[in-house]
Amino acid sequence: MESKLILVSLLIIFARFISASNSRSIIKRLPGFDGDLPFSLETGYIGVGEDEAVQIFYYFVESERNPSEDPLLIYLTGGPGTSVLYSMMYQIGPLNFDVDASYAGNNITLKLNPYSWSKMANVIYIDAPAGAGFAYATTYEASRSSDSLLASDAYDFLRKWFMEHPSFLSNPLYIAGISYMGIILPNVALHVYQGNEGGNEPQMNIKGVISVSPLTDKFGDFNSRFEFAHRVSLISDDVYQATKQACNGNYISMYNHSDNILCSNNLQWVDECTNKINLENILEPLCDPTDPACREATFGLVVAWANKEDVREALHIREGTIGEWEWQNSTIHYDLGKNDTVIYAYDVFSTIPIHKQLLAKKCQYLIICGDHDMVFPHVGTEKWIRNLNLPVVNRWEPWFINDQISGYQMTYAQSEYSLTYATIKGAGHGIALYKPEEALTMVDRWLDSHAYLSDI
Image (cartoon, rainbow, N blue to C red; front, top):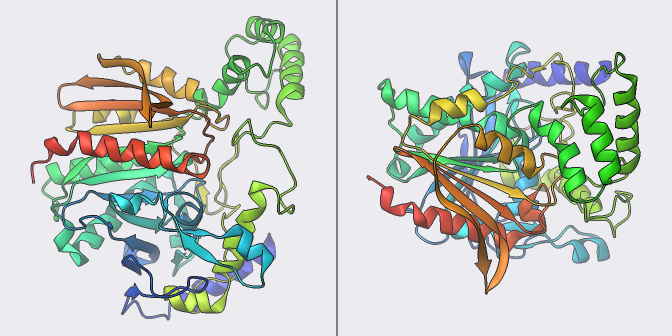
């Protein structure tokens, strides 16, 4: 850890002398893809914070349908501290790794993703905070962030990005992201709404939020794993009832239950039943990530690819700003019960109060959960949504692709606010990783259903 901090400090010192000019680049070709890219890709840096000391790196993919009118999504990935390149290359971006070809040959090979969200929207993918992916800081102080500061920086990023891309100001704007970003997204949206109301320029055409597999409340969502485990028969009725009676609603085993030995013993029983389950998707095997047959083994491709010199040159990464690229920065990434680190403070425990503030805004909110996700189970999401006490306008019902049930959905509304909650059948935490067609279809249909609300 000490050597890593020294390396970070040296990189920060060097980065202070790197010019911020020429921060936007149009990318025509990428190593691993044969020929010119058949979509528009721009990469660049935008500085935020004091003296622009935080340099956020972004990938901007224009819609393949109608970029001048299609929605614009800013997409943040989970962790925090996970590079957005992970979501781009494995979930919703225009390119995927060709796993079979990459492992069979000596070169990492890319292929087109037929279910890219750029089929129906413009998407800005951002690496943030500093230390995530290719984002970096030019001072030690700027390398330190938090949940609340990340939301503020994302808003500042948007303002500056629009100043450099004014032609997209009229596009419907949605704040989007996955996993831990459920703590960040509603706060970013609130910044935008309040900024517009306060007269901040540029005025953004914000329409709402798209939140995938979100963490919303750091007690409720982790605590819901117990209820979920019972629903999907990972624990028996006997285990469930005994633990429910003993633990008084607190099923998080890492919390101190020393004054309740019966609860502690029951939670140990629950852990024995679930600790070998793949929380990302309970139907997937918990396997060795070095085994090429294991889904997680393919994640090593993005690490190898992003650390190639020709890839960095193609993406126009500033030389000397990042040492070894990591798909996830462990000093920023959150785990249950983790205390603040030297560079990141987990200072937002729950965004339910922020959701309640958004009820007064003209905001359309989409929440998508995989019904086999045990990281942040859908049962916890359903519980906090009910606690918003919103009227139901469309009851729980199935939704379909090719006459097959792809999941379930329901819609709530109050005044000019609406919330659609949808599940995707068979999906795990990274929904588009497991069910890419269903993820794209749900988002596309939802966006189309709100097109009439545009006041461009």
